[in-house]
Image (cartoon, rainbow, N blue to C red; front, side):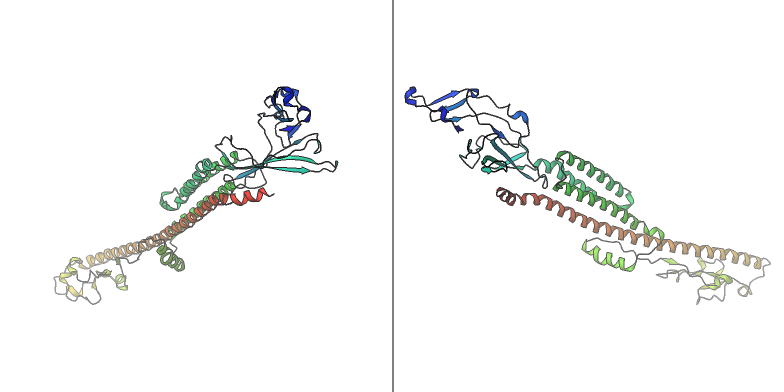
Length: 427
């Protein structure tokens, strides 16, 4: 709206007519342009509506037009960002002495504003600025509209952030998978690939800029690092789990730290790995001299009370059995002096002694082999328990880190809204 003194008249001389409407091409118009215009066709796309001319010379032109202006986008807090855009209108050829621009109100009219599904209008206000250039002494006023819009983040939360959180938690559940299943590393690599795909999706939905790194990009970078580290730690725990196959015992410091500290804090119930073989054969020098050992040392000494008749079928002919040292002499010549002489007795005795020596050696080797196997089984179980505790500790640490990062990302953007608007208004 402007005032043209050449278009004023006295209504009394013209039958009381105070307002007339004229075609826009018949009336002078100030060359007001959008200085930060982004579309050259905007000037020609306005609707050619009539102009309302009042008797006092005030001209009102209510023209509808779609403007496209440039705006510097700050994606630092994407998708919790808000943008401050401005539209500057001024004359292109007239100075302030010829065409003076003034404000009728400092607040923009949003009564006919149509809400947008992606952006919400936070504030709209107008300022008048006067510019002076080095070429000219005249002032050049302009009218600048400041528009503050805030992005609606619900779409991005459910389509970008929530899947990222779920994928990260699934990756962390890899610590809970049994090490013997062979799927711990596979799950970590699969989730890492999924995170990479989501990272590409985020890059497609953001304007390309290298000025700042968006908040969601930082979040995805941190979560990818978490998933990668979790996959690496899974390899570490698998190495611990299978370390017992080499027969190397668990260091006492690590054992006490895991069993007495972390296991109690995380409420992990561990099976006691006690190494106490039920039967251990104790060889003696008498075995090599031809004596038949018949006592097997055990925790309950179950063999002490057994009848020696069950062990040596010929012991009923023995007269001088030495029960003090738990053996029967295999050389039975002194014990058979009251028995009839058998010509093949010595030969039979030698063969029996030879067989019994082989049996004793076999039993001794089997007992040693079983003892070594039991010892290795205990060592394996101890290392597996250490790996289980390390898995639970890493799971707790990564869950806490993931939730902390997520909470920081969710609250950081909205917390800046109030201060950001107030600061930008006065800039």
